[in-house]
Image (tube, one colour):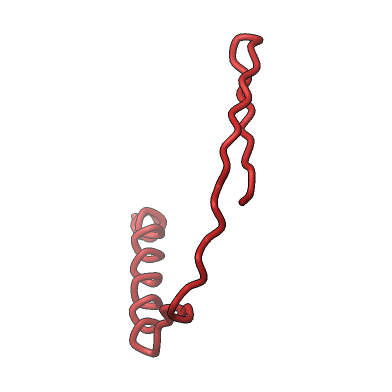
Length: 65
């Protein structure tokens, strides 16, 4: 068991809230992270290039005027 305290100050009044948090049960399955592969990297790069192109669009248009 662990104890968590939250202290709130509002209009010069202090409120302390104490909560007992039970310990977590051990996980039955090991944690596995979701990782991307080459396809995810390609999509990320494509979206990053698109966002950069849209962000620079006013500068490109102003250069041709």
